[in-house]
Image (cartoon, helix red, strand yellow):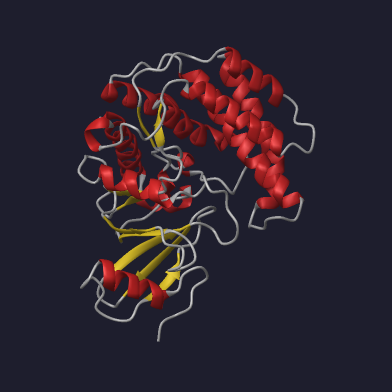
Length: 338
């Protein structure tokens, strides 16, 4: 007997897979929801022999342009023949009659998404350093992919990318502003006034960090996950967000990963130097990008705080998020002064 899962009818999924991937599933499907995601829903399903991963949008109404399953499926499929480790895609279904929303299925990949320093500490400094190094090297491999060569030449609009990003996150802020946030308008204005010239465009992940990749027992990255924010754009936004996630350790915020505080995890300067040396990209203007990354994080957290304060969302640690927004803004302003 199949198990009922919120948002996923296993019997209908099995029928779809039997029709479009005949022979893939050998027996009744069981499944579980993968915990930890805050946006698209992820399930692991299996038939006792094989295991697969299903991704679909959140339950309830979502914007038509958000949570685009075909976009995630496209970029993962395109990167399947590159040096970037991604799961093999199996099927994309845009017929909402099957499970109530578009979805795609990909192979299950073994590995650990390290989220906290306490998970890395037992590995020791040497292994932690190796994992962080692999994280940077994989980002360089992603940014080295020629988008046109893998069929992603029209995956985004690199021209004016940074200007649009500043406007987009500024509008997000305006939509969730419910209190005074000292310094945030100053940070927004400084960023808008000093937008740097972008180098060659690349496939940008959009939320690249250690807990969005899987690491195997030999400390190799086996898969990069969560491509819902990917596009063509300025690759330094990925590097800067990785740096901001590490530097945000200066802000006491349990809801965000603190892996960079683990013994052996390289410092910010070392991460930047490794990326620059291996990629050959000019990182001299990276302070702007890191300042923007702090602004983006502050806006995201303010949006969560706003929805939480309105009773529109619940989650562990959400009650602490509001207090972290202004410290992130302060880090952004301090970065731009450097």
